[in-house]
Image (cartoon, rainbow, N blue to C red; front, side, top):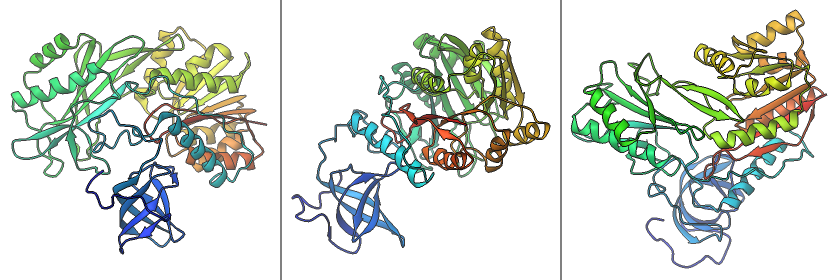
Length: 466
């Protein structure tokens, strides 16, 4: 990987070479994607390496229960190791598992889901099915966000974060998670900013103009949105940029300008202006059409979202007269897809723009048995439990933090017959699953779905029922 420290395999499982330089056999992958080994019975987490490999590593942090280390050399390589196709693999923080054979990625993702359920949830004998693989292991993302970063007085980068660093951006040449069209857009925008000598926002001085480039594209309809995020002010010669973008990438149907003057370095809008096109794109999921604005939440892998939802709905098996509550509903995709199968859908979402988008998506699809409400999920659940309102089925698709403890408490008090839980974080899912099981709910099989090949992330669905 880097400088060679040893050229021959070790004779023992590990060998302490100095206080900080160690030779260790990797035995597992942790939930966060780090490699795992042991030194004198103490766990060591490494920033690289695969199970079955022996590596030389430098301990960079020592804690009472574990050490953290940086791999300096691979002494013995795993048979599951494969060449990474991306030229940025060694520096990018994105596809950390790109050098691991895909079948092994699925194996370790299933293993991690099972471990979370057993260790965090305290649950045994829960069946975790094999991970449903993604047919497209590259070019699958429909949204990518790139940062502008000041390198020197005259130089800047436009790209992604260096692995393990929030304050460093490397200049992107190509990304295998997005389409070739999206890669071309990155180059066009970067060249334009350089040629026109437009200033780039400095996260230290908080001066400068260009901040982020966000690209969204649909897989089924082939539409592309370009969102330019800047400090406050007008984009210089924006007509020239738009003409160039649309000429070079005809699939671009809209260009949006977000202005953000806040010091926090997040791609968000205090003011939005549509520079070209309708200001949204449209995607098709399971024969339903969804309108996506620049700020809309939408599953990042469109085609695999259909697989995730189909697997979840197969577990749910709703009845035609069910009253369904869709919590954390976002732009309404789950509720709208389930609406033809149930009597009524009530969606709850905190973000007002998402609620408006959900209503528009229901109208777009001619769905009339839905109601979308702007509210905090915890407050809404507290209110309906106090009034005695009944829902036969509840669907939750919470953020990575999982259900708020009070929301879960009120949800148990609501006592629906079925609860469909869709999760992007096995750890918080396992925590909530343990509490639901303690409240008398029975778990179905847990169905993991790989939405993000070459990364540590995994989504899953599970049905809880009385």
